[in-house]
Image (cartoon, rainbow, N blue to C red; front, side):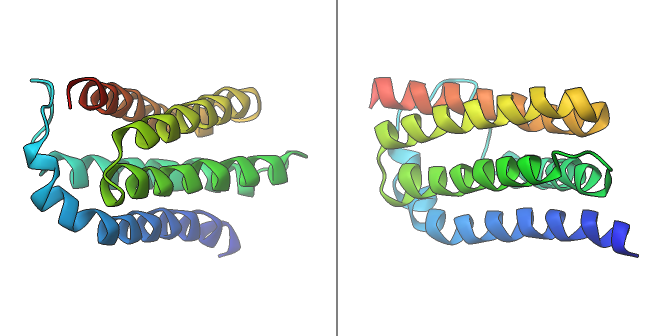
Length: 154
């Protein structure tokens, strides 16, 4: 039962962080974001909650596998996971709530670094954990491009 909770709780935490960020984004997504010049490859708004739901499950599974493992560096990975989750949340605040693409871009670049670090370091100890972070990393790099484009053209 404990091993199952070590996976379920991180997944729920990811969704809780995501839902909390949604609270801060709602007004900007409705009123500010539509007015921005965005690249042609910008997905429709409906894609974002679907993608994030899949990503949150993968993220929670990733850290859950590391929590359940016998590796000595579990605390490092838990801290690294919390750190990237913090920057994930604060990106929503800086980009949408504050409506500042520059601060959002700086934030997402830091998030990129933390997610790449987690992905590479976890590969050394649990390949499945690392692979589960790859959809997040790909989506994040795409979001970095979108944020950068918006920063340049608005």
